[in-house]
Amino acid sequence: MLGVEDRTLEISPDMIKPVQVNENLKLVSMSFLLQSPDLPVIWRGPMKMKVIQQFLGDVDWGELDWLIIDSPPGTGDEPLSVAQLIPATGAIIVTTPQDVSVLDSRKAVVFALKLNLKILGIIENMGGMVCPHCGKRIDLFKVGGGEKAARELNVPFLGRIPIDPQIVISGDEGKPFAVGQPYSEASRAFREIVDKILNDHRH
Image (cartoon, rainbow, N blue to C red; front, side, top):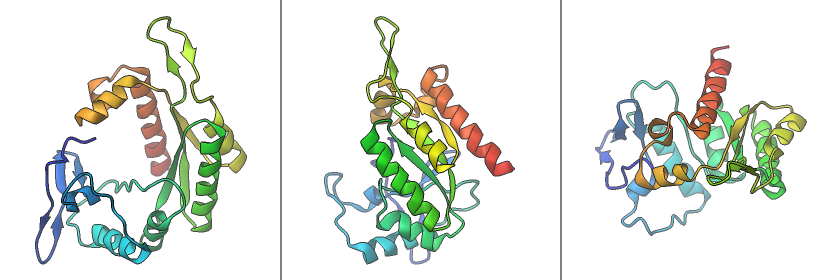
């Protein structure tokens, strides 16, 4: 999604150098360690814990404003390991609006709270789309589930991102969607969510 799948990590006896995506973004990913992009990562808990520990402690990140860790959905080993290694971590929960997804997200919020993480908020993804032919809004996966969960769990609701086919195309091409489509409704939603997180962090 960032257009760097052909790159590799520079590993020395002392440090791992992250892949420099652009002037403001560095990346470390499990995919850089695999011989083929088709290979799954089948590791037990202790091995996951070790590689997360290495990505946090042995990578030459330099000076960072934010370290963003994209973990698999749910309440598994990965977020648990991160919470144990960096106790001050904040959590952002991403859900889609339908009940089955929101239920998992509610569990993730409770899981994070039990680990004493600060919940930065819930994002509702795939929150409807505008038909390109008639201009009518279509709620393919219902709407409002993430917002309702945030209200009931008393955590911030960060915003709703609509479905936009261009997001899929941009992701597959490895180009940042919000840069290529700055005036779209989805880009505005992304910016508003980031602004809320930054403002909360400043205060």
